[in-house]
Image (cartoon, rainbow, N blue to C red; front, side):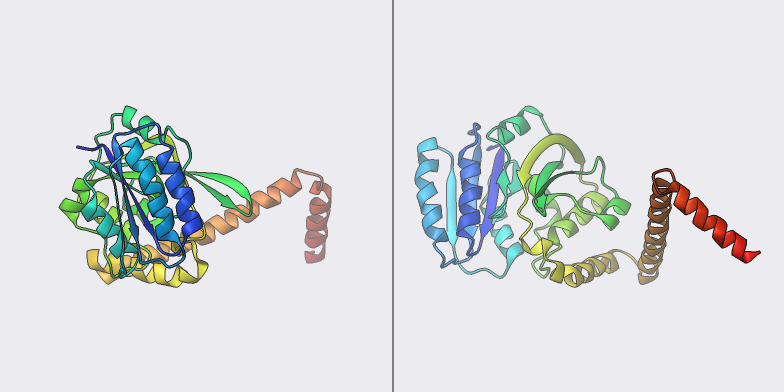
Length: 279
């Protein structure tokens, strides 16, 4: 069995697709296959795919693609899953790319057996580089507050056979839903790995601020399918209280920073004036 199947979905993003496919062909590891699912692009993406097809044949890496209309992101990803034959799947959408030629060989040497193995991603926010690590463990509380970096997570293909494919009714949160249902509810195993996997394209749908309300609604539907409404309402209440506490704590930390710094004398004097006026 092939060790890893990399799945890339694309729709009219030929420049991002080229960057993604180049990072895959550059791998120094050959026990993998590559699946590209294109949504009937008309911007030249198909020509990019066909250009790389020759390179994959020369490298003797199994490669397949299709370019057909789909019903959305997760329908395309599900089509990729159905085509893949690897033990582990890595979803690297167009615009995302592997950080180095040794990513797959380094992963293989780790000897992973868990259902999920998640490393780290690099993102650029306002031209500043940030490394975002996957969590050291996953439970309900963690997924209530964040998600696993999808572009750095190797998932056993058998997970989808046991727990089902991605929910195609969602526009954004199906990868998160899959983690919730398989790891938290289903008991699938998870391991954090010390491996920098990919650069994440922050211009994608999941990073779109305008999609925030849709993300929250999709998450809420998943929770309500797993628990009574009053449990979710209680969790939401305590999350708001936690956010208030964190805000006040941050303000206090900022106050101490100023008080102990150059502004210390001025702050002390202002507090003395305030106290004197009360008298």
